[in-house]
Amino acid sequence: MDTELLKGASMSSDAFKMAKEAEREEMQSYMDRVKESGDPHLMYHWRRPITDLKDVLETSAELYGEMPLFQQKFSASTPFQDITYAQVLDDVQALGTALIDLGLKGAHIGVIGKNCYEWAESYYAIVGGVGIVTPLDRELFQDDLEKLVIGGDLEAVITMDKHYEIFKNIMEKGTTKLRYVITVARQEHGVSRCPELGGPILEHEDEEKGLLSWHKLREHGRQLLEEGDRSFLDAQVLGSDVAEILFTSGTTGTSKGVMLTHKSLCYDAMMAQTMIKIDPGDIFFSFLPIHHSYECTATLLIGTYCGATIAFCRGLKYILKDMQEVRPHVFLAVPLVFENFYNKIMRTIRKQGKERTLKAVFKLNRVTSKIGLNLSKMATKQITDMFGGRIRVFIVGGAAIDGSIMDFFGQMGIISVQGYGLTETAPICSLNPDKKEFIKNASAGYLFPFLKCMIYNPDENGVGEICFQGPNLMLGYYKAPEATENVIIDGWFHTGDLGYLDEDNYLFITGRQKNVIIAANGKNVFPEELEFELMKNPVISECMVYGDEKNEDPLKRGIYVVVRLDPEEVQDRLGKTIEESSDQELQQLADEAVDKMNATMPLFKKITHVIVRRREFNKTTAMKIRRFIEDNKMA
Image 1 (cartoon, one colour):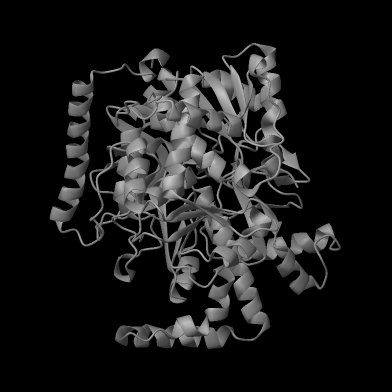
Image 2 (cartoon, one colour):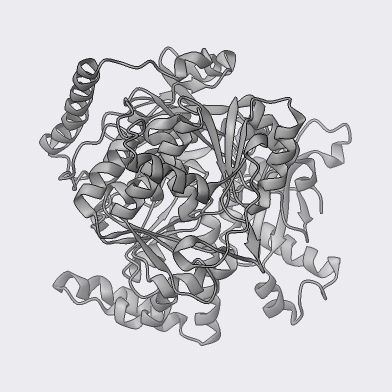
């Protein structure tokens, strides 16, 4: 797609008004048709239609003005601070006005850094009338970031302290379109300062060199607004405009810029909330990297749309401490997080000798809950207090999880569901509704309305490639027409994932097409299936399955698994730490776990080689193991 086409063209005020009215009617029709469908899975359909991300923030600020949109801990010694919807809109309008004043109207602007208010404000300012946002992975190094600056045609980057020097170096090389590096805050003794809390903002600024202070830029925008500058306030944003270019950080190694429109993101937010009840004032706990489409859409965008509050976690080591302080209602994460929660809870229960008692309570509760008496909540209060005591909804995405783990949390009184999607689909395509009778946690969820799903080239079991057609699909990959044509064929987006739809329109994922292992007998083996089964064994913390059926050495052919063992399980079983344990002892534990799973598998699916890994796997920031990294296949 021509890069100039993405910048859009200014319309007359009358033409723009007519276009917006048509868009609002279209989005309203989605909600009307959901309501009229009578589909019991789509329970919540009272919210307003939204046409674009500027519309989302402005209408939510009008509805929920003095309610907190964000909560953030600006220093370790202070409590989480509320930032209201009205304040956010005011700040966004100031920052957006300043960015346009810099000459960035229609520009591609990167945002990089930790989950925080400044990131979210920058995001809303860019998409609210300035240009196109490119969220960048904060774990990448300079070479990779430079490639994305070039590949995404970035003219400015808003960055936190950690990446300031990196982008300064990239800009000074003069080989990219980068004109401005806008730094949010320097740090003093590891603590970021902000004007609201007093103290210095230690930011380098050199306007002539394009090095700007984010805070000073925003204040300049306020001054422009006071002087009557309406360039941002009156900016024309259409649902058909590209809002984001997100570079995939998947497990295959090649990043592609996914172009998502305002409409695709708004559709996703509107449909998701028909299945999960989100009340104004609910608190989302933002933990996953916000540059990832899952967190950005499902927490930031949906939270804003629904009148919720988004509390930013300070990082992995603070996750439970921060949850206990903000006491959230909704938490989205990847399987690894919930698996760790589950394993730690179950280990504690077993050590206390209470596992049988808990199972009895769960069994009895299935009867008493029918008359409105929830025994589980009383029996598991100590556990739920770990999460702040108010948690109502756990949502898992990004990969498959053992349904029994989600059912376990469900029995504690926490609505626990999983969904499915891809960056290219904005990202959600299916989701388990939040009513007990509709939850199928063996599945990836109920298909979104108005989204067509085709199972391409199914086998004898109905398993084939999952393809979609609908309002949430990307426009394509930025400046990569061949890559786009390879995945969007005759209007259908080919996901590369394998699975099937059941008779109730629930989607089941069986594996990834690229990862399929062709066994010696010609049958397909899905690594994800074997990994799923292995992860049921508490001694295995993480694993990656791959095949090598073409090795010249016949003894080295077969199915491999690389495993990392759980430190606490090793301690319990061997009476010493992993570091103190010999390779032979760890190998025996791993072999026993694999043998146990192999006993349940047909011959062609049996794992024949087990590698024990002591180091962390190389992963994406969405916590997925990168399968293409050769080092991940080594001990």
